[in-house]
Image 1 (cartoon, each protein chain N blue to C red):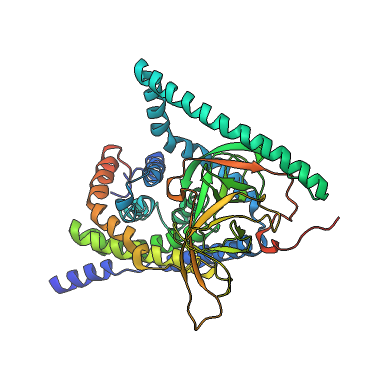
Image 2 (tube, one colour; image 1 turned 90 degrees about the vertical axis):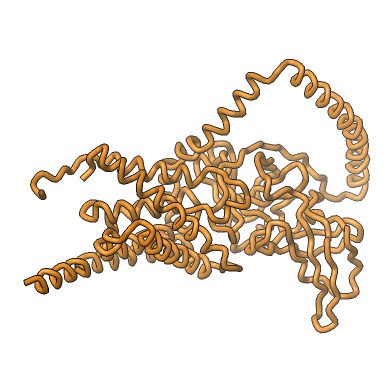
Length: 298
Length: 163
């Protein structure tokens, strides 16, 4: 009798629910179908829009304690601290203004020379500020979520910068939020130029936040540690001349056709809080990463 | 017993998932960041174990879909992983539930590891293969913090008499 009871108990412990397998099969098939459609055809963007808008309040809720703290520190900051900060900022502004004056004359001169050469004039860009909402949970994918979206005029392919250099570009613009890919993401390539020599090449993301790879530079090219990389403007997505990084390692391996060159991004990619979005003319390129090479002809 | 079973308290489950999502999003110091447990998956495991007749594969899938949007990823990536976790939990809940808390934590470790592996398989397929073994670290964080979550959610469930 006891044996019967215990065997029933064991059978209870190992009971299998047959409909669960069916359920799992259905839901699993649905998710695989959705992933395929999402990845290959981008056909679920409307669904994502709706869901992203539904999730938006949650992101705001997460930011609430931090925002409240910032607000409180601002409200209750002592007068002397504020005065001190004010003085510092004023000093900094004078310093920056002096530099800006130099820049204005340089820019004017540059424009004059360019018009003499009859080459295209760099148009000034409009800048929009956005705040970081969240970092992608996948540690190997360098995506960040920003608190501005299509409603604020963001578009896919828009360059993202911080005060030190290029961060990345927008890859998805939802109504209220947007996702940016960092230049260190393994799937990102940035057309750059070595500032000292003018050599053009691509900077590929390495999957590490402090490393960019420059895999297409030949052995006989003049590259030194400390060289500054700037955007080259090729591909039309990033405007020319924004700082990207500095070369940190140059290795010549006689066995391989190219030099092994590593650069460090100038932007502080692990400390992003606020970013600048450049609005440099409407994107010339179809808003799809996959055909980034295709340039629209007039 | 089955006749007096209450069916209310769905909002308690929903709010627990919401709080789990919020806790997961809060920034951590960079050393601990790698072990940041997936609270949403843990809450799902808890509810699948405590109320297998109410929370199952469908709920796991729905919660996962919201995570796909909230955390970034393909639509269906977290959904698939959490549906599998819910399935495994709903098949094994009788055994897991009967074990002492620290042994439960080991089962949770395995479930969370399976979830991570599924998510990173899919990431690998679309061109983001994991580069080291750190992606399994959140499962360890989850194992360590499982007793805490279990006790809190159990008391919440009893207090609100969610059945």
